[in-house]
Image 1 (cartoon, helix red, strand yellow):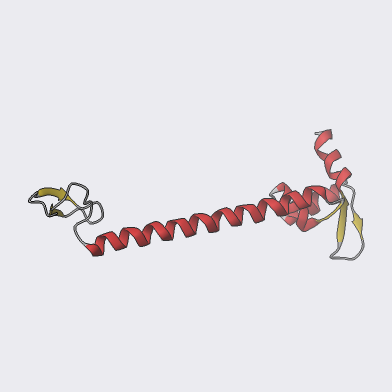
Image 2: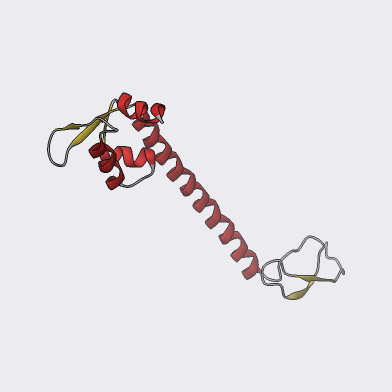
Length: 119
């Protein structure tokens, strides 16, 4: 079944004017059609990757919320602040910490919760 229809259209990818032989054609060539398809696949992969990254991040934060003893690095992730800020809070005595080594400081989860309940 061939048709004698000739419709002037604009390609949805390259915005060039072309003559379509059917009413459903959206692209001027196979090349434009392929590029749109590849772009669509690329964006699906990117979206899937971003969703996986968000899931991993939220999983880690949920894991930190359950832990009883937190390191300074864990607290920085939970509070979204720098290590120096946490060390200053500990030095001022607002947050009780257990110092095992120079580089290993632990904070009880309950003490961190008390810090936010007091203020």
